[in-house]
Every structure is written in C-alpha cells, then in structure tokens.
Image (cartoon, rainbow, N blue to C red; front, side, top):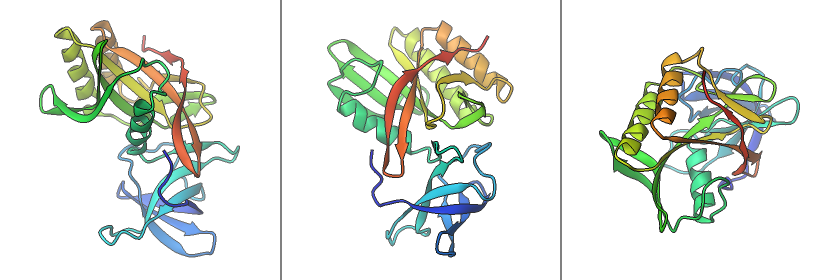
Length: 235
C-alpha cells in the first residue's frame, strides 16, 4: 500500500485529545495533524520525536495532515495509523501475497457476523471460509519484541470472543497481528497491561482460533506486510 501523497517530515510537539497532534515541519511551520490511533501510543509520542505526515487537500477534512509514521533514531520506522493494516492487508490478500495464508478466491471486508460485529476480512475459496480479525501492533518495550495491546482493549477482547464463537460452530477463524515496526523480530501479549485480553487470547486459541503475526515493510513511500514472526502465547 502506497501513501496517496508524499509524506513530509517534522518533529512532534505534542499529542493530545487522543486524535490530535501538533507538529513542527522542517520549514518551521507548526501544524495540527489527525492521529488515527486510539491507543496509548506508549513510547511513540514523546515531544521531539521525528514523525512523518501525509498532507491532503480534501475540503471535507478539517485537518490537512495525517500522522502516519514515527522514525526512530536508529533509522527504523513505526506506523501509527491503525487504519493502515487493513488497507495494506487487503491489497496483499487480493494479490495472494500474505505469508501463512493459502490462496483465497474471494476477499470481503467488514462482513457482519457474531453479535453486532463486523469481521475485518472473510476469505472464501475451495478450502472453505476463514474469518480474519486484524490488530495493529506498535508497542515495543524490549529490543526486538513487539507487544499487543498498548492499553486495555475491551473491543479487542470482544473480537476474541466472537472468533471463538465462529470455531465453536465449526468454522475457521484467525487472529492476525500486523506489526507496524521494522525493528521487531518477535511478538507477544502485554499481559501486564491487559490481563483480561491475555486470558481471552488463551481461551480463543484453546477454542481453535489460529494466530498469525506478520512484520511490515515500512518507508515514507508506503507499508506492506512482511514475513511471518514468531508469536509467544501467554502462559
């Protein structure tokens, strides 16, 4: 998935009200950008952090910039826009380029299922259907280790229960973690942040829900799913 317009670099002044960020551009201008991330963004929102924004000229949008990336001092990138994983994965699924998933003839997004929920992707083919829920992983508190979640997620827990409901009825379901960090080589659950989610994932796996973690290729030009990463289940 390529960004629609070229990104511009800047330095973060502050993130506030969850969805707003003030950024100083390289020409000295200070702008307010939309931050499409409801999580805590632990370790990613310190003042002075180098960030990349996507400009837009859409008259329907109040803010003319969207915060897309953090560039770390070591040259690695983290994608902070939680809408990107689904867009990137959709392109890769249609192109049949997602590691760990066989080819599927049909890729449908936001299909209703469960109790008033929508699955991120319903894949269909001769091998049957599989329900795929996607989560964006951005937290890293140890070198090389990415963790999910970065804050308590009741919505994420609900999704696990819904996936377990699919397998209980004889269907197939997959929890896919897309790691939007180029410095991660393994993934685990942050059970100290959200023990209920960790317990929910354990229960979902025991109910037959699959787990797949993928890395990302990230540059200021775009984001694409990368290779499969090892996932350490809780407990």
